[in-house]
Image (tube, rainbow, N blue to C red; front, side):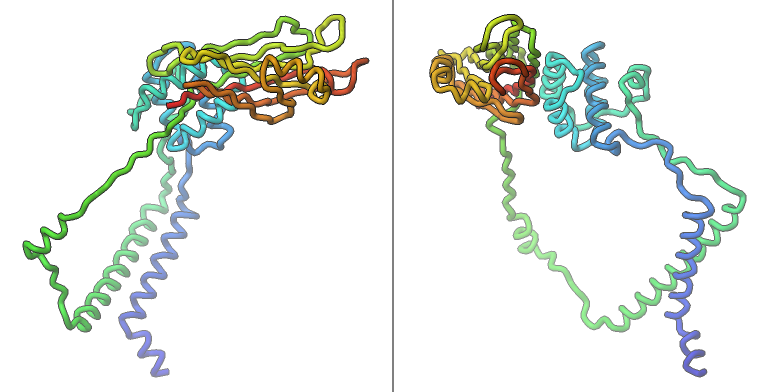
Length: 347
């Protein structure tokens, strides 16, 4: 019994009780009586797929009104992952046209401010799906007038008692004072520090991403895209995809091979690679004939083919492909082919 009374009379026991009571009341107030209710969230807090959709709408809005300042502000609102989201839109542009995407990439590459000023939401923002961050909204009840002061007072009292007890014990146990060295020699030594900052500049950077789709019946299929400098708009070259070979007779054409090409104004040659169907690639005679046009490659879903010149490089990725069916040999001609071309400059 005496031990219990002695424990209760100790200051440390009072501090512990005060802290526990304050924490309990604070949790009760914050989680039960007056919890915080979030009204809206920042764009950067959305799911990744929603941020990608938002950036597609921003690109579409910029293509319509050409308002560079608003476009950059909306782009910056995506947060630190904005560049990764732009790359994902480049890989999967959806309904965004290649020219609009290239125009927006050029704008970001030229301006790219580190911080965009906050602006009020406009009708254009609402059309693009912009959502500005808002503060949390809470409702104050009549009970909070009494519980909040009690909680704060209890916490303050517990904190004061704890700090006083800690300071008292430190003062009693302290034997040697720490004296920092502020002599001229120590100060000079502190300044003799060499700071080296290394900046790694990437040797290659993406210029633009294009996407082209062939479907059976498009007998005149031949898509080409202009590659330009994002900063100055200077013409650098061209790339594209066209029909290289057909099999069988009759309409529509049964395309068995495509040619993917890259032209560089700084190079004397045009680089070409031939994407062949499985049947055409296995036929040595046909493959040898097409090899005169370019390097033969068997087309497979997800396959990435690289074309490289003096100052440009293009990565051609087969996004989607399917073979046609009929009287011709199996897997000999294409029913559909979607190819993505990513142009990269070499420095």
